[in-house]
Image (tube, rainbow, N blue to C red; front, side):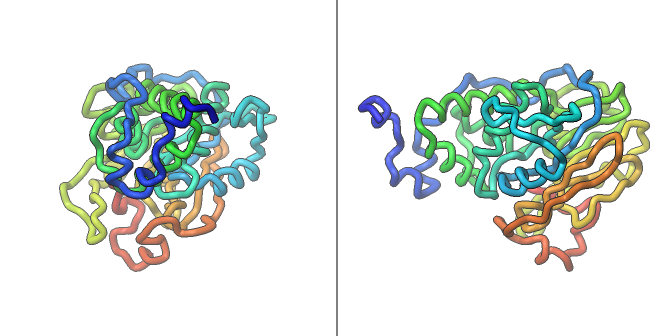
Length: 305
């Protein structure tokens, strides 16, 4: 490492506390709106492998991709499938698990190779705001993601940070796929919103519909939009850890709380087949096993901060 690189490496003490991380220079990209791209119609053809909230669970992601038949492309960390399938990431790639940066490297390279598509989650949005230099709280696992990022060599760190911001900021908040038969959104979408785009929709699809209440653990409680959904398009979403994915009113939540010790799940479309990998650890609390007796942990459930 030359002297210039050393000057740009953060002091180790800054990486050990949230306050130290907060003081590090962290503007890597131009500040701009997030998830306001109106191009929600996506002509990427099926078949798709749609993956729920990864939250930095890199080992589980690699094992899931192996089971689904995905292979390294030889171009960076990008993946390809011998049957020309496409990955669809449902957002919340970072925070809580131990490998948020490797997850992002795989996603960024696969998106660049056009073997993957992506819709932003609330955790991704917060990371992008941080990388734009905004003042955000390093809570709910974000401090760990930032630590991973600053452990990279300076040039690699800057390139990846800019790529993450570009992917999150420039993506539409949801995607309409398979000629309107399928809609993917991180936190779901109401029938009236499909095909439209505005600030309300961008927020809803990333954060859900908050009641203003919180669980004893501090997680926001959201309204169950899927209970009233009657649309013709299948909506695949995540955001809310559930014990078992269930097709309900032509929607399905595939977030099985991998970071909380549950499972990482993919929906194969159009087959409508679920493939899951059990989490190696509970990286965050409360774990899914601790939530088994929580009356709020249903197909609607309590949602992440």
